[in-house]
Image (cartoon, rainbow, N blue to C red; front, top):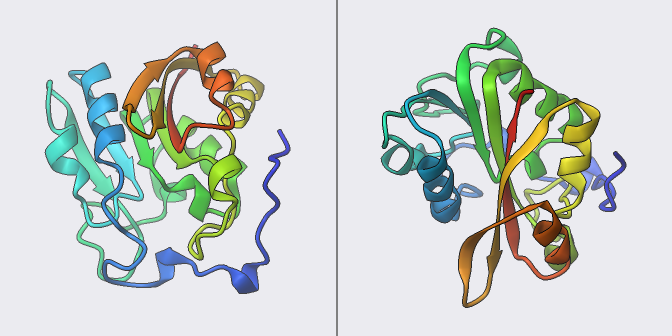
Length: 195
Protein backbone atom coordinates (compact mmCIF):
# COMPACT_ATOMS: atom_id res chain seq x y z
CA UNK A 1 0.00 0.00 0.00
CA UNK A 2 1.43 3.35 -1.02
CA UNK A 3 -0.17 6.22 0.94
CA UNK A 4 -1.26 9.36 -0.91
CA UNK A 5 0.49 11.48 1.73
CA UNK A 6 4.25 11.65 1.13
CA UNK A 7 6.62 11.13 4.03
CA UNK A 8 7.42 14.54 5.47
CA UNK A 9 11.04 15.67 5.25
CA UNK A 10 12.36 14.43 8.59
CA UNK A 11 14.11 17.78 9.13
CA UNK A 12 10.62 19.39 9.16
CA UNK A 13 9.17 16.79 11.53
CA UNK A 14 9.20 17.14 15.33
CA UNK A 15 9.32 13.65 16.87
CA UNK A 16 6.98 13.80 19.85
CA UNK A 17 8.60 10.59 21.20
CA UNK A 18 11.74 12.62 21.90
CA UNK A 19 10.06 15.40 23.87
CA UNK A 20 8.67 15.28 27.38
CA UNK A 21 5.58 16.94 28.79
CA UNK A 22 2.15 17.48 27.30
CA UNK A 23 3.13 19.26 24.05
CA UNK A 24 1.86 17.19 21.13
CA UNK A 25 -0.12 14.94 23.48
CA UNK A 26 -3.43 16.78 23.55
CA UNK A 27 -6.43 14.73 24.67
CA UNK A 28 -8.27 14.38 21.36
CA UNK A 29 -8.91 10.64 21.47
CA UNK A 30 -11.77 10.34 23.99
CA UNK A 31 -14.45 9.45 21.43
CA UNK A 32 -12.25 6.84 19.72
CA UNK A 33 -11.31 5.26 23.05
CA UNK A 34 -14.95 5.10 24.18
CA UNK A 35 -16.07 3.58 20.86
CA UNK A 36 -13.45 0.81 20.97
CA UNK A 37 -14.06 0.14 24.69
CA UNK A 38 -17.77 -0.33 23.96
CA UNK A 39 -16.96 -2.84 21.21
CA UNK A 40 -14.53 -5.23 22.93
CA UNK A 41 -14.78 -6.75 26.40
CA UNK A 42 -13.10 -9.09 28.88
CA UNK A 43 -9.66 -8.79 27.33
CA UNK A 44 -6.11 -7.69 28.01
CA UNK A 45 -5.20 -4.49 26.12
CA UNK A 46 -1.91 -2.74 25.43
CA UNK A 47 -2.52 0.94 24.66
CA UNK A 48 0.48 1.79 22.47
CA UNK A 49 1.64 5.40 22.44
CA UNK A 50 -0.61 6.17 25.41
CA UNK A 51 0.86 9.64 25.91
CA UNK A 52 -0.29 11.00 29.25
CA UNK A 53 -2.31 7.81 29.90
CA UNK A 54 -5.70 9.51 29.85
CA UNK A 55 -7.02 6.45 28.03
CA UNK A 56 -7.19 4.42 31.25
CA UNK A 57 -10.46 5.96 32.47
CA UNK A 58 -12.13 5.29 29.13
CA UNK A 59 -10.69 1.87 28.34
CA UNK A 60 -10.87 0.17 31.77
CA UNK A 61 -14.51 -0.85 31.36
CA UNK A 62 -16.39 -4.06 30.47
CA UNK A 63 -13.65 -6.27 31.88
CA UNK A 64 -10.81 -4.67 29.89
CA UNK A 65 -7.44 -4.88 31.63
CA UNK A 66 -5.29 -2.10 30.17
CA UNK A 67 -1.53 -1.63 30.24
CA UNK A 68 -0.20 1.66 28.84
CA UNK A 69 2.95 2.00 26.73
CA UNK A 70 4.93 5.02 25.57
CA UNK A 71 8.61 5.82 25.10
CA UNK A 72 8.89 9.57 25.60
CA UNK A 73 11.22 10.89 28.35
CA UNK A 74 9.44 11.00 31.70
CA UNK A 75 6.54 8.84 30.53
CA UNK A 76 4.23 7.59 33.29
CA UNK A 77 3.14 4.65 31.13
CA UNK A 78 3.24 1.14 32.61
CA UNK A 79 5.71 0.09 29.88
CA UNK A 80 8.37 2.45 28.52
CA UNK A 81 10.10 -0.01 26.19
CA UNK A 82 9.73 0.23 22.39
CA UNK A 83 6.93 -1.94 21.01
CA UNK A 84 9.54 -4.00 19.17
CA UNK A 85 10.50 -5.35 22.63
CA UNK A 86 7.00 -6.54 23.53
CA UNK A 87 6.66 -10.33 23.13
CA UNK A 88 4.51 -11.86 20.39
CA UNK A 89 0.82 -12.33 21.24
CA UNK A 90 1.34 -10.74 24.69
CA UNK A 91 -2.11 -9.07 24.74
CA UNK A 92 -5.56 -9.89 23.40
CA UNK A 93 -5.78 -6.45 21.77
CA UNK A 94 -3.59 -3.44 21.11
CA UNK A 95 -4.97 0.06 20.76
CA UNK A 96 -3.11 2.97 19.25
CA UNK A 97 -5.04 6.23 19.19
CA UNK A 98 -3.62 8.97 16.93
CA UNK A 99 -0.11 7.50 16.94
CA UNK A 100 0.54 6.01 13.48
CA UNK A 101 0.81 9.50 11.92
CA UNK A 102 3.83 10.15 14.18
CA UNK A 103 5.75 7.04 13.05
CA UNK A 104 8.04 7.16 10.00
CA UNK A 105 7.89 3.35 9.51
CA UNK A 106 4.09 2.94 9.46
CA UNK A 107 4.28 -0.57 7.97
CA UNK A 108 6.63 -1.80 10.69
CA UNK A 109 4.44 -0.16 13.34
CA UNK A 110 1.29 -1.78 11.89
CA UNK A 111 3.01 -5.18 11.74
CA UNK A 112 4.13 -4.84 15.38
CA UNK A 113 0.55 -4.13 16.51
CA UNK A 114 -0.52 -7.29 14.66
CA UNK A 115 2.37 -9.28 16.14
CA UNK A 116 1.72 -8.22 19.75
CA UNK A 117 -2.05 -8.85 19.67
CA UNK A 118 -3.73 -12.24 19.85
CA UNK A 119 -7.17 -11.12 18.64
CA UNK A 120 -6.66 -7.75 16.92
CA UNK A 121 -5.90 -4.07 17.25
CA UNK A 122 -7.47 -0.63 16.86
CA UNK A 123 -5.85 2.38 15.18
CA UNK A 124 -7.20 5.94 14.90
CA UNK A 125 -5.72 8.76 12.86
CA UNK A 126 -6.64 12.09 11.26
CA UNK A 127 -7.78 12.10 7.63
CA UNK A 128 -5.07 13.34 5.25
CA UNK A 129 -7.69 14.61 2.77
CA UNK A 130 -8.71 17.26 5.31
CA UNK A 131 -5.64 17.90 7.45
CA UNK A 132 -3.06 17.72 4.63
CA UNK A 133 -0.30 16.65 7.07
CA UNK A 134 0.25 20.21 8.29
CA UNK A 135 0.69 19.28 11.97
CA UNK A 136 4.35 19.65 12.94
CA UNK A 137 4.31 16.38 14.93
CA UNK A 138 2.89 14.30 12.05
CA UNK A 139 5.32 12.64 9.67
CA UNK A 140 2.63 11.09 7.44
CA UNK A 141 -1.16 10.94 7.52
CA UNK A 142 -3.57 8.50 5.93
CA UNK A 143 -6.89 8.44 4.10
CA UNK A 144 -9.73 6.20 5.35
CA UNK A 145 -9.44 3.74 2.45
CA UNK A 146 -5.68 3.15 2.86
CA UNK A 147 -5.18 1.30 6.16
CA UNK A 148 -7.78 -1.39 5.31
CA UNK A 149 -5.72 -2.13 2.17
CA UNK A 150 -2.58 -2.54 4.30
CA UNK A 151 -4.54 -4.85 6.60
CA UNK A 152 -5.73 -6.90 3.61
CA UNK A 153 -2.10 -7.26 2.50
CA UNK A 154 -1.23 -8.65 5.96
CA UNK A 155 -4.19 -11.05 6.02
CA UNK A 156 -6.11 -9.07 8.64
CA UNK A 157 -9.87 -8.44 8.63
CA UNK A 158 -11.49 -5.04 9.15
CA UNK A 159 -13.87 -5.85 12.00
CA UNK A 160 -15.24 -2.38 12.84
CA UNK A 161 -14.80 1.22 11.73
CA UNK A 162 -15.84 4.62 13.02
CA UNK A 163 -15.84 8.07 11.37
CA UNK A 164 -16.01 11.54 12.86
CA UNK A 165 -17.98 14.29 11.14
CA UNK A 166 -18.67 17.85 12.32
CA UNK A 167 -22.02 18.04 14.09
CA UNK A 168 -22.38 14.27 14.10
CA UNK A 169 -19.46 13.17 16.27
CA UNK A 170 -18.16 9.62 16.07
CA UNK A 171 -20.37 6.98 14.47
CA UNK A 172 -19.97 3.39 13.32
CA UNK A 173 -19.62 2.65 9.60
CA UNK A 174 -18.95 -0.38 7.42
CA UNK A 175 -16.08 -0.52 4.91
CA UNK A 176 -18.18 0.92 2.07
CA UNK A 177 -19.40 3.82 4.21
CA UNK A 178 -15.82 4.43 5.36
CA UNK A 179 -14.75 4.85 1.74
CA UNK A 180 -17.83 7.00 1.04
CA UNK A 181 -16.65 9.41 3.76
CA UNK A 182 -13.06 9.30 2.43
CA UNK A 183 -12.89 13.05 1.79
CA UNK A 184 -15.25 14.33 4.51
CA UNK A 185 -14.46 12.57 7.78
CA UNK A 186 -12.16 14.47 10.16
CA UNK A 187 -10.66 11.26 11.43
CA UNK A 188 -11.32 7.56 11.58
CA UNK A 189 -10.76 4.59 13.85
CA UNK A 190 -10.39 1.04 12.62
CA UNK A 191 -10.46 -2.27 14.50
CA UNK A 192 -8.66 -5.12 12.75
CA UNK A 193 -8.95 -8.78 13.70
CA UNK A 194 -6.71 -11.76 13.07
CA UNK A 195 -8.38 -14.48 10.98
